[in-house]
Image (cartoon, rainbow over the protein chains, first blue to last red):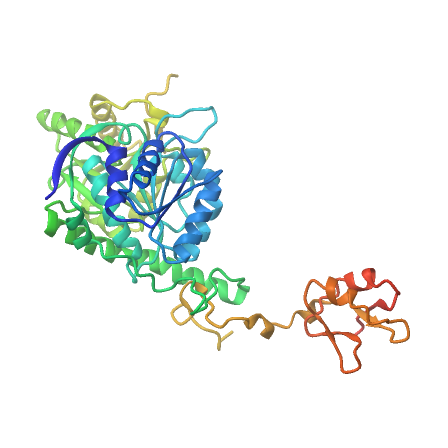
Length: 391
Length: 94
């Protein structure tokens, strides 16, 4: 039976990985992800988890080990953040191009400089096009559930893609929350052992990631693109199956009071929890406000975006990342692109907020949404705004 | 390119299931200089065979070390290493 316990989210993620009975963990510690791999090394040391724990000299090596072990058919996990992800980035493309179902937790953190350890989503956005499935968890329970689901999604023969599960560094990774931890039977009934269809095997030889000439490369990329887009179906299937079994169903856009909403706030990750309070306050003031929490970033849930946000007059998108010199937040720009060819589309207001651990409180969300309504009424939508920056 | 596989029929992730199939790819046409051996100077020591980075040197029916021009890329290492100056690089003319 599942047990509800007060637990640090990083430890819950680590426990989920142990329950998934991974074969290989290759990781390098970096704040704010350290607790996850630290606890996993304890689980291996004390015998709770029968896995190879590979201590590597860098994140580049961590991902390289993961690629090797996943290619050999092992269920493989790693975790990183920020500069660690940047150092891995070369290998991220190898993992997805070779279609290896590695699962990685990213405790999202700012990329330096200036040197900072605090959280935002600039790291994940820096590898936007690396071909991984990217999912955002909003709270501790989601972080636990989605960790277990991630292996099932990634390893599905219709998918075979690596998956990055983002939990906001500190705001999620370091908080203690009540989380329902499933037991081994529950997890193993949901997640079958990994039986890799393609694996390095001396008795049944194959070559992965071979040299490819220009007359083949584009077909391979198209195949990968279609596979990532198609993984949407499997993600929904796995999320629905989880809902039936355990009562918590996830959707690409988790909505709150959006049905009759004139204005909808869209945000990915833990800040959606705080934003919910702002929605309630705006409703008390008579403003029909709603919230959409973005869980799925890759594949980009285009249809869900159009369906769930299309009825509103204004959509306020909050990015915890800045496309420097490029015009705002990456999520806002993709939402704008999704609506571009629609005759009827909401005004989309882009805010960049909460960079490097800058707190965004419920009243700040309220202010951003009220200002969005003003911009829309005046028909003067700025390209983007960095919220709360001292002028 | 019409007879090449489409994105639907190409192997998953470009996996290659036939081991050793690089022999089908003749890299000899990359060559701009070709090594040529003079039998009178060759003492059959085999140093060219040892140094060749492409395993493009084989022993012919007379026991001489000969160049497999299907795979020799013309790097010139054999000519440089030959202790008797039996191999010279000459320009490909065709």
